[in-house]
Length: 127
Image (cartoon, rainbow, N blue to C red; front, side, top):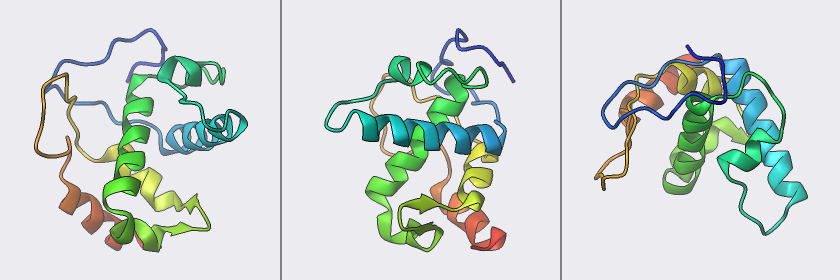
């Protein structure tokens, strides 16, 4: 796993490296706080780099963005693991390690990981 912010995003279809669940959670919380401070403005990956966490890389950002996507498209399914806008640690552990691929710039019909497998792992990991 690369630990530099300068590592490029992978090519479409390539595997996304697993990340440390604690790094994923820390990045999620820090970007949530950054968005709160800049209410109404978009926060990009480059803006998130301003957080200054040296363990943030494109894999952490990408996996974090998949949690956000699930919160938009599978909110009810994800609800048991979100309490008062706080995401359960099992979500970070699961998203950090589930097999995933880079999507690239082409249009896709599905997410770059097995969503059913993701929720199966969540259920097995407990709330």
